[in-house]
Image 1 (tube, one colour):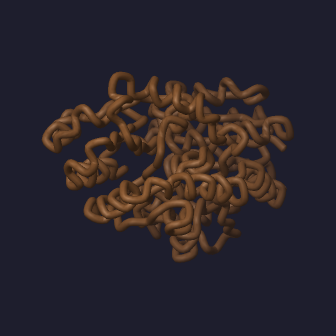
Image 2: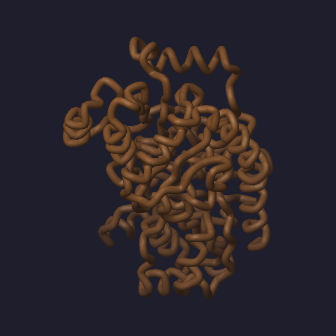
Length: 371
């Protein structure tokens, strides 16, 4: 099939949408003709261009109607020239532009698949229009999102719940010696003082909730003086740095920056966390950490708890609740052997349930059902 992926994000950071599309590209490029139409300066454009056999097109998705019409004409040329069978859209902005681009194509109109990635409330009117004019199948990335979709106009279309998949061969626990080298490289001079390294590759935006981990560690006082926190993502804001300083953790919070390959970062950690309080659904970051053999502390935001068997491969805490995070951390410090028990359980869960093959095959089945 000729499949087109669209995404409106122009950011250079590697977020969930980017990982989602690139994972499908890598899994399906040998079986289908794949095209990606995304903003030219985005991380997705860069990474998609590196996947063998994938055709990348620089395409913007402006919000202003006049510019959107011009963008739709440009996208229409891609759809026609590439003889696209299915367009897989990943947000309302690119969805609207795709609908405009397909108007008047008649029997040549490609089928349109929408994936909803976040917990942002669905506009009834907007969803009703998009459902009627250009939605043939809808994918939710977790049970939480499926419930949102079934309560919206999108319920009029076939709906599948397909959770994000992880390449378990790529994200696998590292041998102890190699992991120790990664840890020392990340911590530098702080390695000797670090007795427990907790971290997250979910990003540094405020809504990711990582500051709740810092507040929890500060709350524990001297009993947690060996605990260090590592974060991968965009540089922190001045306000965030000021709070870290105020908490007395400036020398124990490590910002690793933007990483194309997070595996060395994850290999260095003892425990992972994703403490988001909005937007988050199932979280690639959580599943990557579990695949690397890390137990993970998650908030009860969106679909995050769907990843975890409480006390077996991780912990679930209320969102925006540093006291609850502190209680989990105190339990880990009192029983550090729990990490050795729960890490392998997290890995086993990932291998059994989070595999990339299942994710790609189920998504491919949606495309084929529309052929």
